[in-house]
Image 1 (cartoon, rainbow, N blue to C red):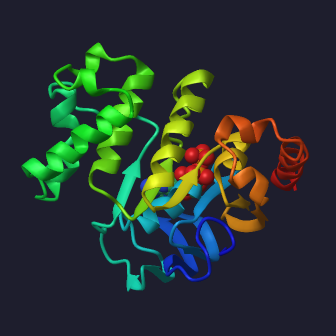
Image 2 (image 1 turned 30 degrees about the vertical axis):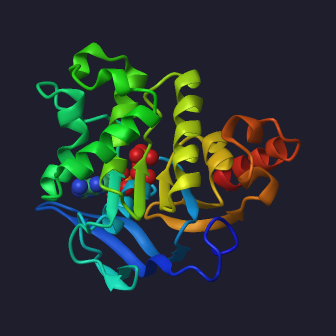
Image 3 (image 1 turned 90 degrees about the vertical axis):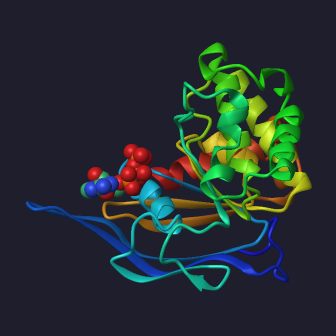
Length: 262
Ligand SMILES: Nc1ncnc2c1ncn2[C@@H]1O[C@H](COP(=O)(O)OP(=O)(O)OP(=O)(O)O)[C@@H](O)[C@H]1O
């Protein structure tokens, strides 16, 4: 995976070598992921798609260092993943905003956790909020925001720590179509200005095709990577909405559906 946003001259941001994951409980063993190997170069946007339960979120948790692999190795910029890395930002489907804190205090939460909260980092977070069209919400509480606005605040909070790698688990699936496209456009706009490696889990094949350089189609239980799709340059370089209207978009979407059904 190197011809997309992350060119071959870029360092390898995420490297998984034959990783597996088995969850153990008192009664049971659940084999979530069979040996999986992939490399993602810095600056590349990769999506993981596949049927429910094939291990997509497990892969994200492994890369995030939240759980250890059962076997195999995972590296972030060459360093073995042993714990959550400061170089990562993680965003989920739920916005996870703290309802008793203002928007300003929510977007600086990650900085606080990392002991990076200073006037400089706070003003950077505020500028990002402004860039995403929410400058006026600084002193509001999350309960005073719409669902789409809350998700934008969550995106700012994730980006405020200036991660090199962005892990996104269905980040836009809880909002309506119009807000989804808007959030996608905002994300791609930020990425065009700040180089980040993105690993996105999504059920939405259109979203994967409109945003990614590469799509990994997973399947099976335990899950494996069944197919790798390199998204053509003409789609990669187009904005998310524009990409959806290109003539090559629908046939590729159909191909992806077929791969999912195999
Ligand atoms: N903490 C856990 N303990 C035990 N089993 C788990 C745990 N997390 C996930 N699993 C199991 O691992 C398998 C893969 O789950 P995972 O959530 O990674 O799949 P997914 O592809 O992200 O699913 P979905 O698309 O439905 O969100 C499933 O069988 C699930 O039940």
